[in-house]
Image (cartoon, rainbow, N blue to C red; front, side, top):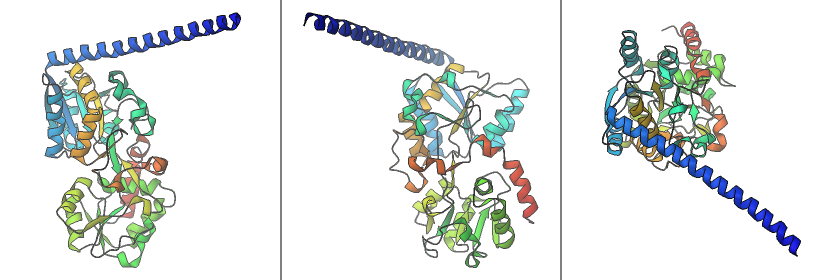
Length: 378
């Protein structure tokens, strides 16, 4: 018995030692991030400002959230924000940088702008080193078990939200919700002249949808060629027009729809519906829309930029962002009950959604546009 008691004592002492060491390590780690965070926030308040460039169509509600929400959390730091389409504000930004002006700290917007303009211009710095808060860096807090990036290097363009793009919008008074089981159904004679599309040769949801089809098994070039040469359709560069004309019944189907405008018009009671992705054999794609971010190289308010990025990726900020934008957040602890469930990706089907926002697909777009121009004669 004495020997067993000694053995137990040895194991107890060893276990106790390991436990104490682990607790000490955890405590030191907590002190490390906390000390770094407090130092960063203090330095950010001395800078007094963070300059945010939003390269997308941010609503007033979203702008207020991105500005006022941060200033309420960190009252010593003011937010300066420039909002505009990525193809409009980014040339201005790059021209300023060529002239030696570095005025902006954080980029929020679509991944195409970041991947095709900002990263090639070496205008972005790595994001992982500036992520400090444990609730941000913990992979278990994020869909798929890790923070997601659009660029191949998984360094410069962080994707924090978006949605699954429903294939089409339709007039609910004139089209049955089970009218489509496949994208190929769109080629049927009954839809001839009843389709209006956002021009897929231009940047936007039309090109994003064409990218999905071009790269998707069971569709590809053959499908696009048949749709664009054999079917009768009309084109538009106005998202609102596409949905309003569909609601009026001048067209029955709208392709390449804008999520925010759809939600606005549907809430007004217009007869609009969206075909759920799960009902379409070939599926659809996952987009970030404007829910991605970048850290500007040579940021003039580098500490405030760190604080802003960490804040935006917290649970509370992501919940506010999802509510303001009607986008899904990649944080798994952010509720989705305020969203139409058709746009929320399902974890068990995640691999079936084409990740259109990734560099792999964005890099194909020039090739796709060239193909479309050879097929489309108008």
